Length: 316
Image 1 (spheres, rainbow, N blue to C red):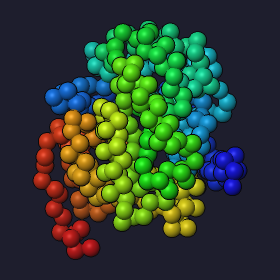
Image 2: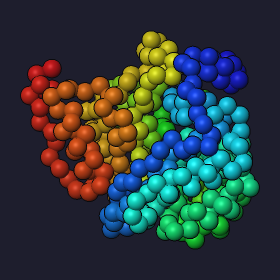
Image 3: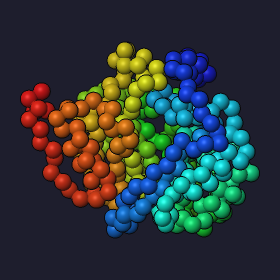
Image 4: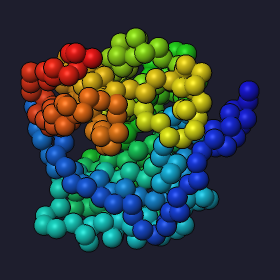
């Protein structure tokens, strides 16, 4: 099946997309984040922005729900960011994270004419994080880096180094392309953040944790300052199709906890677990809240903590 045919199948299985206003941000949050320099903890403001959908149509993606049809209108992201900054009470945090559910350096997602104003709005922050597919990293990345006074960090979805799974995700990303992007960032003194999937389709369940560890180690070796382990969440239709064929196994909360524990050895790279919507992950109700609290603690502290004990889990 050709890439375009796979795109059509994935898009055809999706439920209806919610209506998204390109001039209104989805929301924002302020949270603590651990950084690799002597386990320093900083405050970060994440702005969830609405804009054009990513063109890569990955099989596991759920971010398409938060995007619009067609290109992002000029000025839309600027207005959204202005709304977010006006809503923050008190002093601004150290870091600004601009997550637009797409690729920050894709001209369809972020109009180039908006970059100077976005950079101006980012001036109070000592660091700025954006997200982008490895294929869109290049001269525009450095143009934006020069416009902001703080350090730029680019978050790239590596997802998995499992050779079969990586080729089946419809992401159009191989390790050589990822390495060219990370080399470019390192040579230009831009920080790297990496996203790794727990429960990637086409990975056997009994091998899933091993491949998460291998992928995190690979990202750390490529210079990642931070690696976030993201559990794959169903709901896009394609994952349900793959689950029916035995090619996708929804990850559990205990697996996310085990993945984070097993990756504690890759310091100084900071490894965290994405606990966004963690309440949706399959878990024992008797210990779910304690496990989520432990993950939040480990994310910020990085300090060892005894595993959760649960009689209900042990009896299952």
